[in-house]
Structure formats: structure tokens, C-alpha cells
Image 1 (spheres, helix red, strand yellow):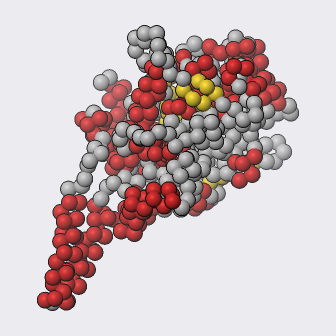
Image 2 (tube, one colour; image 1 turned 90 degrees about the horizontal axis):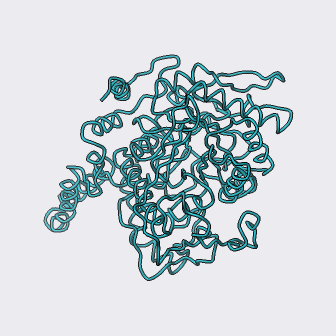
Image 3 (cartoon, helix red, strand yellow; image 1 turned 135 degrees about the vertical axis):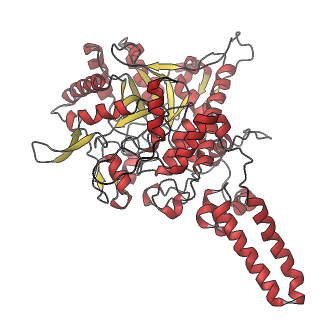
Length: 572
């Protein structure tokens, strides 16, 4: 290992303690640090939690608990007090096992023996209840159970198999991906299927970012998810995929030294400072020195992303309640602890009197950040008006500048908490729809080769990703599927700080459910398994790279020709 690499590793493994003032961006937990040491000493694959792993004390405590109940029955006829004592000890031992020893269920770690009822009902009762009285596996919103099952199976490193045919109505676009994969019975010979994509390789003075995985982890800010969940994502994605930090600053998302896309939101958290606009409005602006220092100290930051808007709340800023702004989160974001944090609706640097002027300022802002960091710079947006894309692409063509990557978010929301009005009614449409429009627009102006496109709306399985690749994506990102891979049960309580699985809460009681070694293993298996399945789908379509997939490889379904403007007639 090079001297620079050793210094970087030492900085990663050093546990930093904060005192007062602004400290380092994040202090990795003890268990996360230990796991990272194991990665470096033994290799990642050997350090992952095995599917059949059980703590040393689990089996003997279980046996003693069962034995106590068995002995309680005959003892009742001999000495009732001894029977009651044996039964009580059995219950206590079982409670200790559930809360402090077992490592396979977050809900049980949080709620003790009562949490076990969830899995009893799920494994023994749920399917029967759904079959005879309520919903089927194809019901459930926003993600049907049949889709969630795929993610759970991949996360547990279980072969995703079923029998007796599909439960989906293949013509129902509400439940399927909106397309059918057209396999080839007589394919041309394919030497091998692989995937790798480079961002920024055509820019002088820029260190290109090589993307290795077909699926990557989209933005979830530190604060929206807690440190344990974010560390699990970081450790699981190491050497597999990249993680987008979200707008909450550089925290645990990159603690394992994994590839990171650092997102700059309108609040400039971690790299900004408070400012006042000429009209007296309070805002936050970029601190160039802080950004350069951050990139210099964390070489695993591979790209900068400017967030213009997101699908959950297009057109408005984020909101982090005061009780979630812990001292450590405040330290990472460089804000005041236990004070509500509100992101401005737009970047102060982009305020303008017209859309055309705002686009021009965006181009210059991108260029400035690229020179400061020597990294590729991308943008993320949820499309509202297509004419704004027209303005952006025309400016890119005219100046030869602009983003190295554009992430297109769907307008159906995601992990971010947002007003119902915006989640349900604001935004142009699906990421697929707008991705197709943008891809064709860039090709029309002959600058498609200068920018990489990614899709981050409703990418849950490789079939969803195939549709995105066919629509022009160079890579795919997911947030909700990543959350499901670490145990999310779609309780839709992300905004309440009462997440039942401990992922989107800062409650110490609930966070105990996030066992970092186990959860990071699940993330690893999901990302790797998704990628392998994506390559297999690519092969059956007769291609050697997912980016070669075209609309001719799919049978696209649309409702009432709603997408007809962006599909050829043969695919409507």
C-alpha cells in the first residue's frame, strides 16, 4: 500500500472525539471501526456476517429457556413454588435472549419478546390472512409485497425463486415495471457481460469517477437516517457501489472509505455558512474553503452533485425537526444543535430574474465547483417543465460547459419526508418519462457523449433498471430499495422519528435494532445480487452491457398513450 493510502487508512480507523466548536465531520462508531479493521485485515468477503451466524450464547440460553418451561410442568405436582420459579426464570432467560443476544431481527432487539410476534404472524399467519381475507402479494403501496420480497431475498443472500406462475397481471402498469423483457431465443454470440462507466473522463484537470455497479445508493441525508443505518450502507457498499450522501453533509455515508458522491443541497450543509440576501432573506451560501478541505481530507469523495430538486418535494426545501438535530448531526451539518434546520427552496447562488439567467448561473456554479475540487460535478433534479431542460441543454451546447452527470428523479416521492400535496401532485411525471426526453434532447444537440444520465425513480429490481437503461440511463440509483435491504418494512413512519425498525429515527431505544455487521452484510448482498441479476437480464436480451439495452428489447405498456410523445409508434 502506498504511503498516501496508509495515511488515509489510519485517518479512517482513528476514533475522533469532539469537544466544542466544529469538529471533524463525523466520528465513526466503535463497532463500525472494528468492522472496518476486519475488512482491511481479512478482506471484506471473509468479514461479512454469514447468513447462518448465531451468537455463541444464543443456543445455550434458548435451551435453558425451553428446559425451564419443560421442568415447570412436572414440578407443579411436586412443588408449585418451584414450578413458578422455573417458569419465571424461563421467561427472563427468553427475554434476555431476545433483547441482548439474538442478532437476526432488529424489531426483536428493540421490543424484546413482544417483537417476536411480528415474525410469528408474518411467517405463520400473514400469508393465510392475506390469501383469504385481505390483500394479495401484488397489493401494497408504494411498493408491492412481491417486489419487496425480491429485495429481502437478495439482502439475505437467498435465491429469489417462486413457482406456479406469476401473480402479476402483466398488463397492469400499476403493478409491473411498465414493460416486459424480450428475451432472445436465437441470440448472437455474446463473449461476456460486464458493466463499467466513467464520469468526467473528457474534462481536463478532472479526476474521472469510475462507476462499477449497475445499481448504487441514492441520497439519504444523515439526520433523515441515523448513524447506524448510514454506517451499514457505507460498509455494505464498500468495493461494490457508491453512496450518495444526500444534502446533510459528509457523515457516516463514507466512513468505511467507500466511493461517495457528495451532494450539495440548497442549505450547503457541511460546506456552507449563513448569509443574508439583499432583500434581507436569511439563506446559506457555499464556503469554498470548507469544500476544498473536505475533498482534500476525504479522497473517497469521487464526485460532487448539486441538488436542484428532488421527487419527494420538488420546488421546496428540506426540513429537519429540532429533536433530530443532535450535537453530532449538527457538527456534520455545521448548524446549531436542537434547532430546526430548514433548507432554502433554491440555491442562493442561482437566484435570478429569469429562468435563462438562472441556468446561466448554474453553468458557472458547476464550473466553479469543478475547478475547486478537480472532480466531476453533476446535478440532481425532478423535472417540472420540459422547457427548463431545453434551456439547460442549449446552454451546455453553447458554452461547452455544464454538468458531467444528471440524475433524474421521479415525481412520485421517495425516502424524504414531504408535504402530501407535493408528494401526490407536484412534478412532471416518472423518471423514465423525463429520462427519455432528456436523452433524446442531448442526442439532438450532439452533446450526449459529454454527460452521463442516471435514473433514481422506482428502481427496485433489475427489471425496473432495464427499463431505465433502455430509456437512456447510464447508471441507476435507489434509496427505498436500500432501506428495505437493511430491514425497512414500509411502515411509512420516516417523518415521525418513530421508525419501527430503527432506520429513520434517533431514538436510542429503536436504533438498537440496527446491528451494523448484519445490516451491512444485507446491503452488500443486495447490491451485488442486483448487479449480477442485471447482467443476467442483459445476457438474455443478447447484449454485453446494460447500457446497450434499447426499447426494442422491451414491450412497453402505457396508459392511454400518455408516453406516446417520447416512444416510437411501435412501442406505444
